[in-house]
Image 1 (cartoon, rainbow, N blue to C red):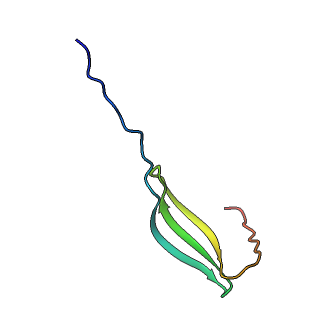
Image 2: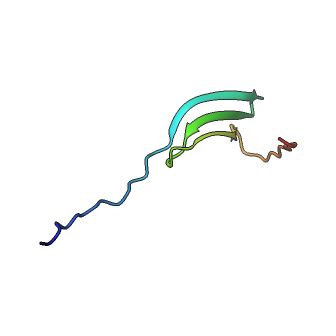
Length: 65
């Protein structure tokens, strides 16, 4: 007796799920956002990032967490 052949589809990564956005700083020239997300592997995460409204450079110093 032989077992039936099972063909499995490769795992398809799920897209990032965006749950919430908080704007931490808005200077008119740039914004700093904090997003609450679920990553493709199912892990919850919080990401902070900078969004420039004009061309330029910005450095943000982060202290110990």
